[in-house]
Image (cartoon, rainbow, N blue to C red; front, side):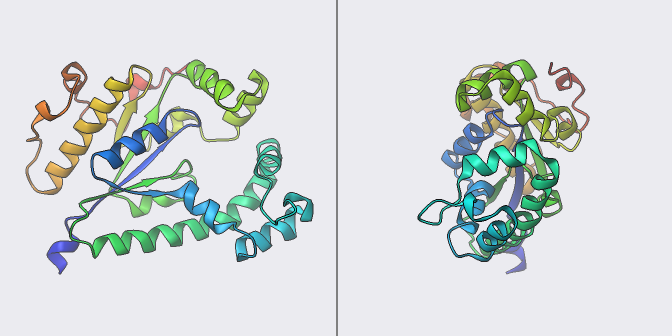
Length: 242
């Protein structure tokens, strides 16, 4: 029914590379949110013999796939991080398909009365124009020095390579200008979880017309819960991320 459709809250979750977005996404899933993972969609879209796979091979050449036909993701990643034009080509192949798949999954969720919150987990949520399909944008952020450190440890790369990856994406400070809520992931995991729990509770309460009435005792680390940002679209105190 129309009444049932109105109850679904769609959150767009994004952040910089190695900012900890995946941790936030997993915790939202634990709290009962339905997750649409854009990276998972992209992986399925480039399986051997799909239309996207064919377009990628036509442009990047047959040496971009292994003997079994699967994309050599590291090789492709190196190409697109070094060349913005090649990155644009790949995005032009994948983004429209990811957007359409996401729209379909949101529509299916609207038909399920048990689903109250859908989280579109997408590193390129803003760049791909996906913010038009979500109600709120949540940006996960950390200071740039910590971002570089985590990226080097995670991908086992040099500081120069880490900076190259960072420079290939929209900066966190720019992403924050699109944010309805900012999640600072530079402290402990408990602090991050408390912030996420709080935001989810408030968002669902507002969607049900209950305003800010949310039993904060359900979340831990109450000191973090007290830092109610309100409107963080400008995110001034998060911009000093260097």
